[in-house]
Image 1 (tube, rainbow, N blue to C red):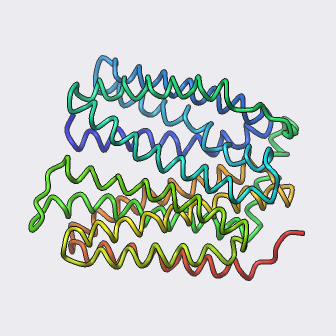
Image 2: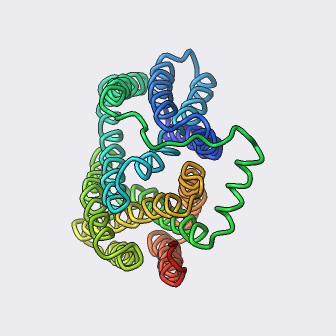
Length: 354
């Protein structure tokens, strides 16, 4: 599989995921959280395995699209489930831990598939990661407590549309959706272009060495958990701007020349991003729980903005690299982080829900 084909397969999966998020959230309001999460995990694992066994390229692309669609049931409702099942005072802390888990998952997925592909090709990578996902799905089936506080919404399109209008009329949600899109856009833009930078002169690193930069995701698991605890103690309004400033500082450090300093800046930026994401996603769930909004729809709206920012600005960062190399990429991503900071400050002025 060529790099272009690999990118296209990722795009198909992301497109399916982004579109399905807008459906999975509302569906969970009617059918429940845990049934959708379990179905999503098992289906995604089986489709991944099928992708590794697919007879040809077109079949693989179709299966990748399906995989993104069926996977949406987990991220769309996981935060809503946590907001319902844990004590309100613990929501921010638990959200930080959950985002920390996604950081570890993102890092592990890249390392595991990279290792499997090195020894057995892309088919072995897809089958292997699918088998690992199947093991995780079984573990979640036995370990995840069933919903105890979920109250199903009426199975009515009018009711779901009314809930969506309520969310979209709240400026806090709109700001948080903007935070998701701009912060993720900056983060993905940096990582997308960083590979090109490190493989080009004067660094000239190989693909394997460049892949090791994803180890910085481990810092995201620590920073998101810490930011969640800080938000529980001092509030999201106080913590989020600090997290954004950490992200900005790391981004600016990547302008340096020495490769170790560049990687250090990348690590700091990663820590700041996952802290922002952990606080923002937990904030969405907590506000929905307190305000009576549809938690699944609010969470899926946040994630839709998150993946939209990734898709759009990740692609724009590639154009920025081609036009002016790293300084232009940093300028683009710094502008996105600046918007994130402005939105976090606007959120401080929006009244809390009683």
